[in-house]
Length: 134
Image 1 (cartoon, rainbow, N blue to C red):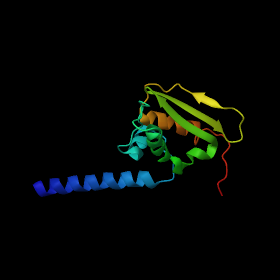
Image 2: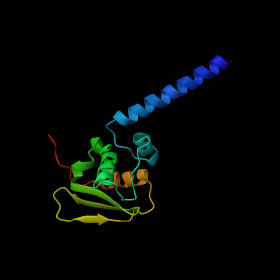
Image 3: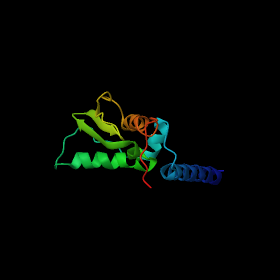
Image 4: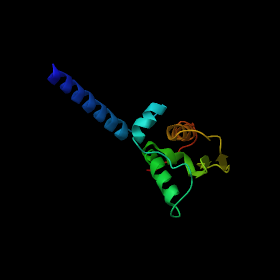
């Protein structure tokens, strides 16, 4: 009986690991916070904005955001930059072939997965023009 329980636990763990790996590799952009969290794993934004070395926080946060680049995150913008100052996130972006520069600062108190899902809504799910990378 104990061996069966152990085998079941091992299979459950293998399924979860395989599923997580599938989510990391799939090209379908996540649509829920749960999917975003699965892709993120243990990665989180450093929201303080404080840096021991210049650029350290910015580089770390860009690496977290770039996990989602494979879904075409940057194909809808001429630039997209996420900045944190004392826990307050500000997103700067300009859509592809647009003259409007957007500064969005409505995400204070949000989690990493909430912020990323919002950025996906503003880009991949926006219906805006997408640049061709071919």
